[in-house]
Length: 281
Image: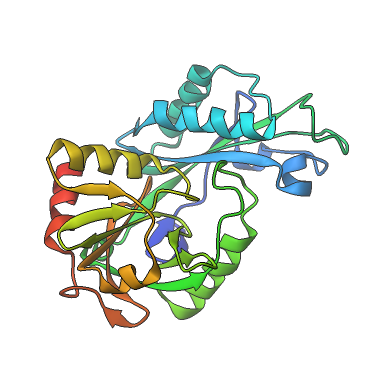
């Protein structure tokens, strides 16, 4: 089996995809060269994880897809429940034990009109997900002055993140943590950021994408009566943290054991991070 490597994750080439509700082999999936998603990055997306054929957090992802589409004025012609069912069917057809599922909706062909959406394009595809287990012992991250242009929307227009990911690949580290021009920590290129300082868990409150796993971790921590705060903090807090961990819908919770070449805490997953990982599982 051929794998496409991406850092600590491997994907197999996708086999069956869903285009506008129709299930097709990979080589039959055709989208117009005049689609707004291709021409302008005028599209929104969600990435989900599926284990043993079951998608995680479908309802939360569908709500965020609708919110992103509304923000850009992209019409969802299909009920959210139907999109969710198509995503589940795509997972079943590809028969992977663990999958990364991507749902993308573009404005479709629409000339130079950004105020209407006559015929949107919906694509759902699925790859086998194989995550190197060693990442859960901790990864290395670097900081970079960078920001998401519109954190209110999960858009395919990701040039700043692509630029940062190229830096990550060259340096062979696991993640870039973005810091804005005022020195406030925002999020990772592919993940939300949490720190533990003086025993309290903190995650940035403003100018970040509202991650599905981020929200779940906050609720789980509160339920377990752990002290957690949504508040903005600066890069100095990041370097003074006892623990740092990242969350996203594919890798879930991943500790950071090294930041800009310096050890974080004891150099492995800290006690609070380990507890949250156990609770999440």
